[in-house]
Amino acid sequence: MNETCEIQVDDKIFVPYISEIKLQEIVAHVAHEISCDYAGKSPLFLVVLNGAFMFAADVLRKINTTCDISFIKLSSYDGLSTTGEVKQLIGLNENIEGRDIVIIEDIVDTGITLFNLKKDLIQHRPNSIKIATLFFKQESLKVDLKVDYHGMIIGKEFIVGYGLDYNGKGRNLNEVYIIKEDNM
Ligand code: IMP
Ligand code: MG
Image (cartoon, rainbow, N blue to C red; front, side, top):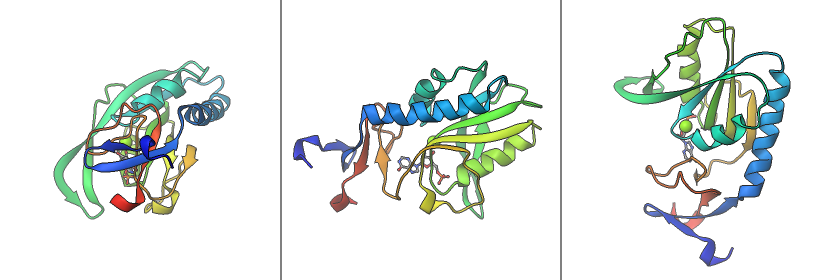
């Protein structure tokens, strides 16, 4: 790898992993799958901020079915559960009863975040809930979570860019970078 391609994000060095062109191919594939499955339906896409903002902007403009789009956030709160940090759902203003929900997420790692989100959403009695994530760290999955659409399965290594951050930085990068092995 050419040394000049390396970038520093906060205190870590990252190297290029997925190019802008490849990302758009991956996103188009996910959009196609969702468009086929929801043809003639009117799903509500719930975009999980902050990380999914770029993926959502690109994937949603390639989806050609009538839909609603809303943005939610999962804020940490003080309580601890047996599974670790519990995140509270904020920003859900719509009545989702009877709706077909598609959660748009940047990355599924242990799956705990979306497992809990799904559990919260089910209490509002939607007709269905599916998950669309750009990246899926399948080997890290710790809970029984069905990931319905994924752009790409990746290993456990940390990545940044295209919405994904390291310590709040790097979200604006238009390619995805992976942490350089010797600076973990
Ligand atoms: P989970 O609950 O373990 O599935 O955590 C998912 C969340 O962890 C994502 O929404 C990200 O905010 C964060 N995350 C996990 N892996 C990465 C990564 O490689 N880069 C950036 N954020 C990550
Ligand atoms: Mg996220």
